Structures are given as structure tokens and as C-alpha cells.
Image (tube, rainbow, N blue to C red):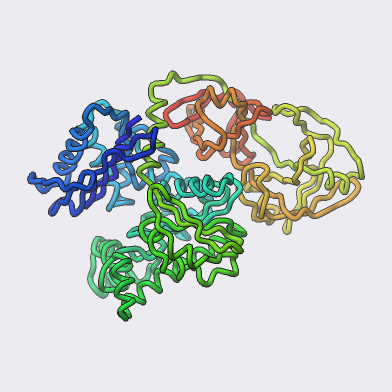
Length: 601
């Protein structure tokens, strides 16, 4: 399958045709300095443009050139990088009029990107009529951010009125390199805590805890966070109002200052290109040295903070133009992080030269606790792969089996050792009633769970016994108990808080195991095949009650031959959704719609 990937900016265009069987780029177009001084290359050969100096006309010219280069090759779909998807999109989506309207609506949140992204979509539809177009959103990967990471500390009515929150960007890159790191290390990323540093003219850092983005440096717009080529990154908001008063700036002038006249270019007074700045710094330029120091200081600070948030770190990744190519910057960032287990091998770091054939380099010292990797990102390939999935599903016949939704109350899973302490050595659980999942049951036995603030009595134990203790609570329970429990997939309890348990014959404090269960769907392999999903896929579930439709986003698929088809949400989510027995809804897997049947258990 051949896929065209379009990444359209306000002053540049990157458009590649990829062969997804070989994962190779067969046609590569780069256009820069648009629209007034267009420089266009196809497969590294310059193409002369002598038409109107207008962005839309230049895009049509470039796409026509790609069409002519295809010859007898046929592309099956077009994938578009779209920077801002807001709250609308947590995964790639087939583009229709509704999607285009949403992208246009979000232009206010990404004024440098979404308008150009939308224009690229419109011109691609003009040149390649009748081909499916797919939007892959930079913000989608960060839809899993917990509320504590999303929210700004401002008036809640203003937040609600304008939907102000942190969305995060570079999600396609962060997701791609996290998965690439897992493949390289031969480990499942759902068992790893990673920090991904995407460093280029735009720069961001992302905390990826067991496969999910749980923090990222960019916010509602791409201005927040790290020092970038021309963007300020984090700045005291009072400085802006101060400058608006002193300089008599309009809001647009202030925005232009933060986006285009700050960052490395502003600090150095030289350039937004780190290569130029490093060269000048080596020649003794103090402004260049300051720019490098501020850049690396802020990134080091973020790495330390994100490690603390995850309770540890397994993998640190550098990517993007600076992250992939600058051994100097990697060294400066890591040189004081040995206390976290980060230690570089200087020879490996200096000698690393990434390429398409050698896209990952392990630059960590052999004694380092944390693996430090330099990875060549490939957002074009990532977008092409996501586009392929949707194109392949587009013409499939939708399946309509019913999937029950189960509402799970707080409960505990215990080990043999813990049961022996709480109920007596060798004690066997007795069944109160079987559960929907084969072989599982709610026991007659209960425990009291005691948190720092309050306690819950008569919390039911579920059987059979497990290899790890686990206490599953809701967010409401979390605040009542006075405990900070992360959202986790069942069984993944590393680094979670512990809690005191009181049973009939004894009490104990488990060291870890308290989680808020990540909403999920149990599936047998035959169900997964029917729905066209696989283990660890993330989907959205629409529940329609005719009065107020709602969507559960970020539902993880769990596949096992021991499972029976069922979706699990906790009591908070069930109450908020007002789900009642017999309600119907749809499960959204990219373009596929699947009927749901709800019930209370």
C-alpha cells in the first residue's frame, strides 16, 4: 500500500509517498520559505516554481508534481498531520465536513498550524479527488493526561466558558519513539516509565508511564514548556501584561513576540538554529552560551520533575533535530542526573550518527540504571501507518455484536500471603456469587481498607487469589481515604501507594497496590478479531441515552482467551454517565461503529 503523508505549515510543506510494505519513502517533497520565496525539492532535486506567490496555489503545484511522479503507482489514502484536535479527537479519524469544521474551530488555539493544516487537506482533496483523507492529531496521544496535569489554576467558569486546559503536542512523535524504544529494548512499553525529549525548533518533553502520556511540557498552545527556536516556553504571565503596558502592544503583537521573537533566537540574538548557536558559543559568544545554558537547564528541570511524578525512570529518549544530532546538548542535559540513574557513555554519545538504517542508539553507560537512547523520529511513517489502518477499515462491513458495560464497585484482589495474615493460614475464600469473567467470583469475605484520612469497611474480596495485592478504588474513594492513587491497568501496581488492610483475624499494610482502574474492555481473541482491534488498543465508547450523549475516551482493550466480552468502568463514571440497565451505545474503533448494551453488576 502506498500512502501520501502531508505535513503542511504556514511557511513549509513536507509531502512524502511511503511504501508501507517496505516502510520506505519513494517520493519525498520538501518546500520551504513559502509563499514568497518558494524553494521546492522533489527527491533532492530542485523544482522551479514560477506561479502565483500564494500558499494555496503553491500547494496545488507541489501535489500535482507528486501525482506526476507516481507514474503507474497508486496511492490508497492521504494522511495529514494536524496539530490541534482539542477535546474532539483522541485518535486518527477519517476526514469529512464535520472534521474540517472542527479543525477550523480550533485555529484559535493553534494559529500558526491549524489553518495551514486545513489548507493542506483542502488542496489534497482537490488534486487527489475521491481518495480518503485521514487526520492524525498531535494532541491525540496526550488525551490520557490526568485532570491534575490538564488543568490550569484559574477561575473554573472561565475554564468552562473557553475550554481552557493543557492539550500537549508532538504526540505523534512521542508515541512513535516510545514504541520504537520498546521494540529496540525488547520490552513491552506498558511495563516501562519513559521520558521522551523531542528537541527541535519546536521542543517538548513527555512523561510516558506504562504506555500512556501522563505529563507533557506544551499546554493549551505550543508556546508553553521548553525553550524553543523562536518560542519562549515557560514565562511569568505577568511579564506579558507588563510589556503590553510598557510597549503599548496589542494582544497579537504580544503573541508574535512569544512565538516568533523569543526562545533561542531571542536569547542568542543570532539564530534559532542550535548548530549556529553551538558554533558561536565555542568561539566565545556569551549570548550564545547563555541560550544553551537556559535551554539545557530547563530541560534538565523537566526530566527531574517527570521522574518524580512517575516515581522513577526506566528509559530517557532524545529525538528531534537537536536531540538526534547534538551530543553536546545530550551531555549537558544528563551530566548532573546520575543520582536518577542516568549516566552516559561519552564515546557512544559522541559517535552516534542516526540514519534510516540505524535509527536507534543506546548511549547509556553499561552501569546506568536508566537506559538513555537517541532515536530518529519518523512522524511521516507514524502518520502513514495510522492512515493505513483507517483506509483498510473504511470499506469493511460494520459488526454489531452487543457489549455489556459493567460498573465496578471498590474491591480488592489478594495474595495467598495476605489472606493468611487477614484470615488465618491456609484459609480458602468462599464464593458469594460468580462474576461475568470466567473463573472469577465475589467472595463472602471482606476487608476494611484504612487510608490516612478515613476508612471503608466491608470491601469485598474478589477471587481467585492473585500473585500481587491490588486495591481498586474510584476517584471519590481516593479523596475520602486521603490517598493519591494513579490510573493504572489492572495488575500494573509498581510504584503505587500502599494501604492498611484489616481482616477477620489480623491486619497488614501492603507496600503498594492501590489504583484507580483504567477503564477497559475485556475481549476474547475471537471478539478482538471480530472488532478489528488488538490487545492494548485505545478506543472511545459512545453511550447514547437520547437526552445527553456522552463519550468515554481512552478505553483500553485487554485481550485474553480467559476473558469474556465486557467493558468495565468504576462507580464514579457510572454515576456521572447515569448508566442504567438496557441502554445502548457505540464503541468507536477509528472508523468502525459497534453497538453496546449496558447493564449494572
